[in-house]
Length: 105
Image 1: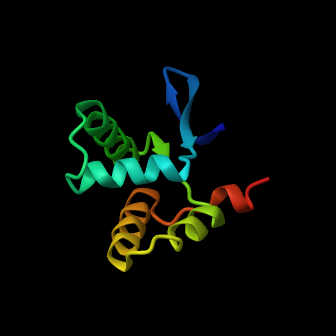
Image 2: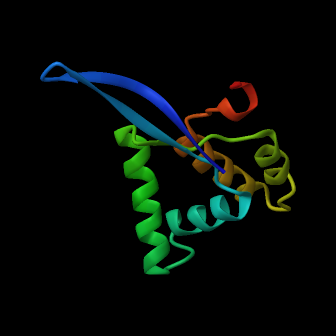
Image 3: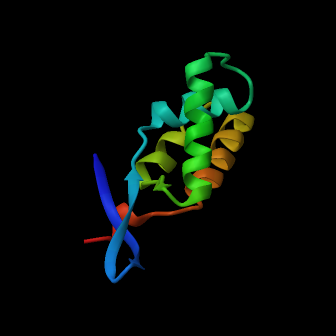
């Protein structure tokens, strides 16, 4: 599922250009793969490039990576407290604890 959100408009020579920001909803398996790359547990070069893209997109404001209640519930199922902590910390870093899919019309 991909949704677009208008983040603002700028005037260029009398015309308005609408800037769009992507809302990218990652499934839990994608968060787990990305966190593995983040902590050096997966050395797949394409996964590393994806992680770099996700970080850059978030920091530049090109994309948002919201979380849902399902993410929190799935994260609690990990048997290792340390793995839960690392995954949750990473998800919060990338998402900035954004929950728009729960509240936007």
